[in-house]
Image (cartoon, rainbow, N blue to C red; front, side, top):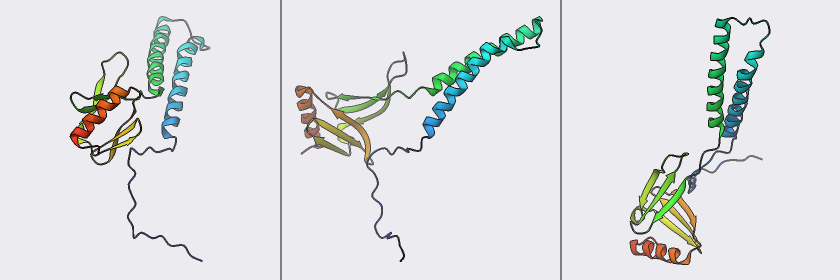
Length: 164
């Protein structure tokens, strides 16, 4: 008995952003946390080094090593934090969708902007709206609970011709 592959039909591409679930990002974050804890321990334990004299040059070296270890530890800890998820802004008056990302106290930065007329497709399932960008890339997946906003968004999408 043999098994053969039938390649007569091209594979259908997935609609949306593909995420690899190999755990590489998890391992990277865990190793960054372990490195951060290690450098924090170095910053503290450098003062308990046996056999070291209390000369000024040794103390200066220990202080410099402690400061560098603290900065490296803080940087690795920041690197190990999960990324901030982007937010979606739907501007009905300007008829556009904006994907925004915030980082700490910085003002929001526009990652992607797309006009309603440039959308590839819009899927509607009750109050759940999925907007696809050019090339069938997932742009926004939103659920609206406010009936007035939902109705005005649907009217704007219909006026552009993205909904029937």
